[in-house]
Amino acid sequence: MQGTKKKAGKRRIVWNRLLPILLTPIVILVAINKLPDAFHLRKSIDDVPVSELTAKEVRALRRYNNEYHLEVARAKGIDRPFKNHKEFLDDKYTYIIRYGLREMSDTKYYEVPALTYSMPYLKKEASDFLEELGRRFFKTLKEMDVQEYRFQLSSILRTEADQHGLRKNNINATQNKTSHYFGLSFDIAQTCFYPQGESEPIYSYRLRNVLLRTLIEMQDEGRCYVILETQTKCIHVTVR
Image 1 (spheres, one colour):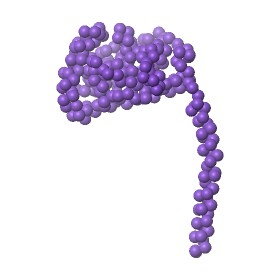
Image 2 (cartoon, one colour):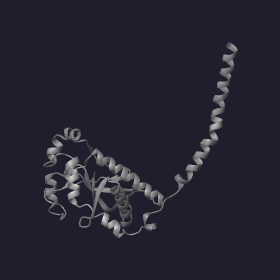
Image 3 (tube, rainbow, N blue to C red):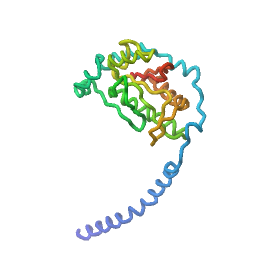
């Protein structure tokens, strides 16, 4: 019995010594396969042709007007608008818990600049949507052999005071009638994108068209409504 245990122990020792030797070629092969990605420099968007939006794509971006956005935001979002930033910030954590809000900040996919007429908060559903949008956008860029670019959020959760102030400068801002009140809508700057690792943006209609095609795809899946706003140079999105 004791001899059997000794033999088993010897076999374990031998196996433990052999295992690293057997695994080493596999590890080397995996590393070699990853080397091209590690050292390959993808192209700038300026070096890759991107087609203009088709008539069908333009129609898709006009299909759902603000009434559609407002209807779904009222039904599924925050139950009432905040009067001003102070009302929200005075009891911020209560509202975050009550409405399932997330504070938005820069990620690998998008930038959140200092906001003038809104606050950086969205419901969890909209925050999760943005992450998926970013992943799909990056995947498309990789398939094009184009380097990664982050898009920029330009307006998020608005208060009634925000909307009132915005009306002075934005002809698209309707008085007391915006889906931005309810935590499911956000605007993306149309042509402002940040190359990975850089803090200065570039301005690109090619990147805009790639991002818009991703949004149209998600709209067709029933995930969101999208409007391309020509006057304000933003993409208005409401998560369904």
